[in-house]
Amino acid sequence: MTRQSDVLVRRLRMLGEVTKKDEQALGCLPFRPATIDKGHQIASDGELLNQSCLLIDGYTCRSKTRADGGRQILSIQIPGDIPDLQSFHLERMDDNLVALCRCEVAFFAHSDLRRVLQDSQALTGLLWRVTLVDAVASRVWITMLGRAPAEERMAHLFAEMYVRTGMAGLRRGISFFLPMTQSDLADCLGLSAVHANRTLQDLRRRGLVELERHEVTIPDWPRLESFAGFDPAYLHYRDETRTAA
Amino acid sequence: MTRQSDVLVRRLRMLGEVTKKDEQALGCLPFRPATIDKGHQIASDGELLNQSCLLIDGYTCRSKTRADGGRQILSIQIPGDIPDLQSFHLERMDDNLVALCRCEVAFFAHSDLRRVLQDSQALTGLLWRVTLVDAVASRVWITMLGRAPAEERMAHLFAEMYVRTGMAGLRRGISFFLPMTQSDLADCLGLSAVHANRTLQDLRRRGLVELERHEVTIPDWPRLESFAGFDPAYLHYRDETRTAA
DNA sequence: CGTTGCTTTGAACTAGCTCAAGACCTGTGG
DNA sequence: CCACAGGTCTTGAGCTAGTTCAAAGCAACG
Image 1: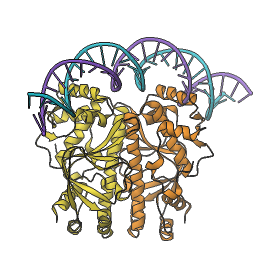
Image 2 (image 1 turned 90 degrees about the vertical axis):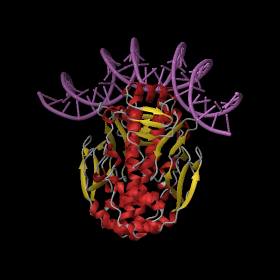
Image 3 (image 1 turned 60 degrees about the horizontal axis):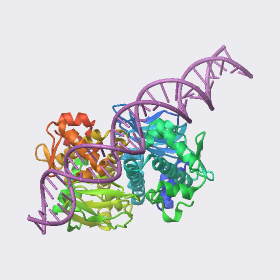
Image 4 (image 1 turned 30 degrees about the vertical axis):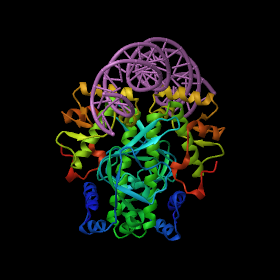
């Protein structure tokens, strides 16, 4: 039972059962801890990886930069997530993994994970499931980017982070940490920085979110949820651990 | 060796090795063939599945309908794809699976697949890989929807389908079948039907694509590829089977 | 050979963009 | 403790990519 495996097991338990035996097996997985500075790239587009990292503390995001200089943030990770788990089976990275603030991570070798999974069908299924939930979230984003207006898109992002930080035990009441500039938000939502600013002002005016010094507050969750058309089902948390408000 | 398992094995071989033994195991997987009419839903958002289907002939798409009536197409499947493989681990569907034309599919029970995968780490990894490649493609779409202008988005879609149909042996020279209306294209690209029409005209005028009666022709592949900023790497085909032009 | 769905066109509108400048923080070195 | 620098946020103004609405032309299919 390392501290790292504990973080991982807690995350996995949101998606399914983890037996004592599997927990023990993960406890034997060797982790190499590291601290990553804000803005630093943990892995880059095109790079070949033979390890992945478990995020212990801090936030990361995956982003893609286009030939024309445009940047798109694809997803945001919080402690307990494994940002580059997909590289376990697709060695070549398809995007950049960047630290949004000073992060604590724990690297593990793919070969070591492979050894652990060899003995557990259940654990394999659970990690597979982790990558699938990630994919579902991507598809939800496609729908938002393709069809939702800016206000709804931004509201949806805050709603998702509200629920995820809540499930991970990182939310204090109705507030959570979100280390992103408005420019980052824009890159996430497919907007210009200027319009992200105006959209945020709009949400503030409506009393849906407050945001200062990277601290987001949701004064009226049901209203935000309905404004954003947010349905937590796509996060696929187990029923028992339901997204309690 | 059923006809169905043959289609599947050919697809899997694009992503990795399949041993004789694994091929045999898949040959014993029981398939239930079915024909689906154009426009018919094979599975719907929210539905609980205990089976998935292998697409044998025809095209399908996955789509999501918003509360406001807007529709977003998330991905397009061609023969050899398993459109709802993710339901193997996430029982609840997160979107609709629709036949874009009359389709031939082959259903298989999750319990049967589980039995087959129990005996093969390699096959498990390969199917996992299939779902991961799907996820990567979704992320590429996020980037296109968030940051690329309409012409590039549409060109990219044609480019992707050009390569995929080519790899699957479904392309005749520089032409391939694409059973989508302009309205479907619009729902795929996050555009209005009117603008999809004008964008298509633009691409025609530039001599990048021809399209009539659901038949797409790419007169000058290198030019389309560069116009779309298309890089086939994200499809993760094995090097040996590289996207030969 | 008429009906229905698909494509095309025009015209007016709007969401979101770019450019540009000013205000505001926050951390750093003197 | 102040002054300065660099990033972030905010605002205004003009522009453009893409929208909506509406109507006409086509093509496919029973």
